[in-house]
Length: 189
Image (cartoon, rainbow, N blue to C red):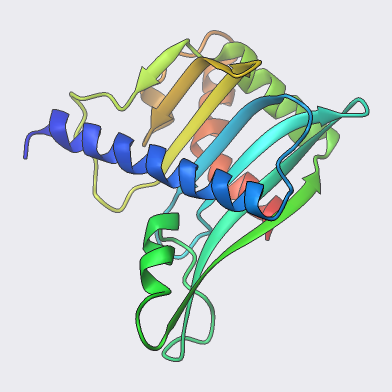
């Protein structure tokens, strides 16, 4: 498989995962009535929490509704957190496994809200998995989309933030983008 087709396959899997997460959020009636200003997604490795989150403004503050996949098995004390929503759904159909999607809402701190606004402002319009870049298969896959109404006006999908052409505060912002999965993971634990 060529690098280009591998990247396209990963992108398609990511879009399917977003669909699954959004459907779950809608099914339990937590889909925000306010416009979503951005969404974030992470599929990490080493049992960090995978997640999908929609960020919106309510009463002058940023909030996020999130979904996180978890797989339970009698073999493990803790749930497995690093797999996709699609994998969680498949695990639920296997004996001895319980695939769940946990949904929640969090009010964002001022610090995390400022970070999200800075990211939204300084991202390029589009950056989708640099096809010339070789990625270790167990790296952290992350994505951010910025919305204007229902339209996606910016989309960044990446493994390593140092390849993203950000506008301002380049080193600081790239560091934050590299660690966004950990920062958001702390919020949704």
